[in-house]
Length: 321
Image (cartoon, rainbow, N blue to C red; front, side, top):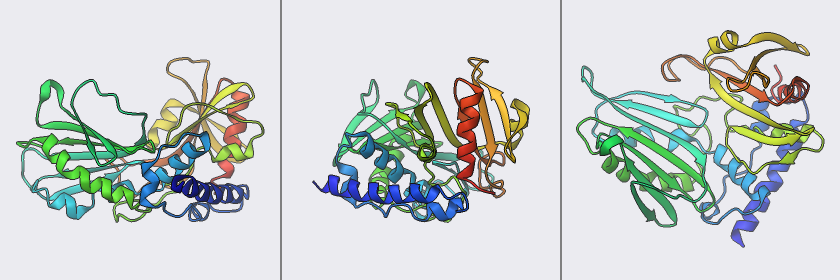
């Protein structure tokens, strides 16, 4: 009953946000600030069975500040050396630890996701309360690397990858999971961590464009940074990501949709499938992303140019210049 009441609240606020999104004069960050309030901890403990419940879980997960799941204080307590860097992806965070001059460094990468029930083929499975956990050591059981998955009954999950020299990485991961699970239940809002970079895509719902299109249909696939739906007898994919700037021009041809610049390319697997990409915000600050600078990009894929261009034209109204 609590789950149903909580989901009803999340749904009501989500619908209000979608309504605001129809105003092309509303800035994307202002729309995002009207997101649903953080759900109570028990929200994550009950299965989400209906498409609307699953959509609400996806949006509640997008609102979590992934970097806040492992704050710098916790990273410092690992005794792996100085924190050399903490960098971000749209739904991920990466920390590099090691003293100056050290030959090897420790790397931790963690991201949010949506998962079905875990069905492990290897590794160690266990329960931490109602959260299903899977710890998988590196190739050939190399203790210096480990992947840890924690899945909540509601279907939201996070994955933690650790590679540390001269330590049992799975033991390190195992020690971090209880704190990460507890912080997740508190639903830290985007911006809680000082390392998180505010962009127009942070916490944004890639399915928001469906409110602007008539007669779209659901698919059985739920993702955080992509939305797959049926429209005009085609399957459309809308994706949000941070991308290397040079990739847009290197892989695509510049075109216009209205007064907005887009880049058209085709699928690597099927050259008949068009892909439209567009920059929707400024480059992230130097040093905030791993290896190279990145920019916020939206991407639309469909079977035909006509449908892809129409959907992209509506997506761009969600991110006015």
